[in-house]
Image 1 (cartoon, rainbow, N blue to C red):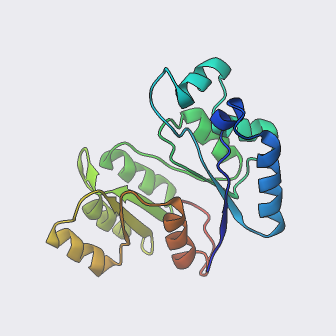
Image 2: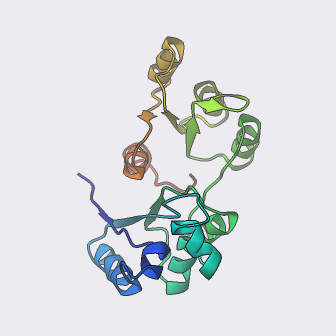
Length: 199
């Protein structure tokens, strides 16, 4: 069994006085003491400019990731989920904290990144603008043998695609799913062998 401390303490909640930076620091201290990952929703809430996350962002200019960085507690032990408003700056801050994260908006772009960086793992949406994640995962395995390919989908996969996933041992995550499910697959398949150096 693997445990993770969940700390619902985003910049929105801090700004709205629902919780505090002190609570977030204590959560991080507690997680570090017990060797736990710590997870929090980032940029959660709504896309509306009139309330919640984007309203706070417009007023303060501070994203959740930026807040963690300013507090001096952003590092690679964080699992940051629900990044519906996650910005390029947020991703850069995560990378500076020790993460190696590659993102692509199409199969074509993803292929280029895989050839260049040879990642250990890939999380692929089944429905892509220029292909599907299962067939792309098969191509990735040819380029990087041993890569962990995880397919996420909001629908039932066609029979042929399900068969490909079984043949190549691709875990399939049904939306919505938790970040802990992704991390569980990564830890179970990669960390015992050589550690995750690229993701």
